[in-house]
Length: 254
Image (cartoon, rainbow, N blue to C red; front, side, top):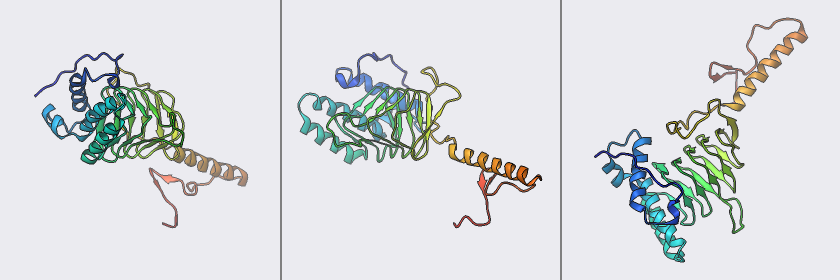
């Protein structure tokens, strides 16, 4: 069973109407085929991908939420949570072609907003950090990838075409075309811009080691300065500096 991409009217958000529900389903399936190398057929995705099942139930529960049926909407979202392991509050706004890969442990809060063509991996949290009733969850731009175990917290914006590395904790807004790594998340501007015409950026394990590189350069500089002060060149490597990609010393107490 093959599936071809179909044009979607992107100016109409899926949370505004259920009239194009089946068209959106088809587009979601195509997105999974495009982004998951393990996917073999549209039928397999239709019946076996809990990430898409959670999204489809959410579209119904969100419609109920916006039509004064909040209790039923919450019940439906909790039913989907039990069946898929993915918790999406019915108040959250989700754009087109969201793909949740594996999905177990994903949590999307009430006032979260997600743009188009976004990819989330398992263990991702789009959480709130305030007791206020207003906007307290993140807004995620288009074509953003959020890696395994990452936490994006608070009323912040993650700009278009950004990538959040696995297990990063993001607590401040992220400019467009950035990569975020670490705890708390460090923002690194891309050397090469990602655009809407590029293939999905799914390499969420490609994590620049901002702290490690800085520390290595600092240790090398300290050793160089010590050699100048002592008036002699040193032959040994800087103390604790990594050899290749491994950090070595006499004893790191581990």
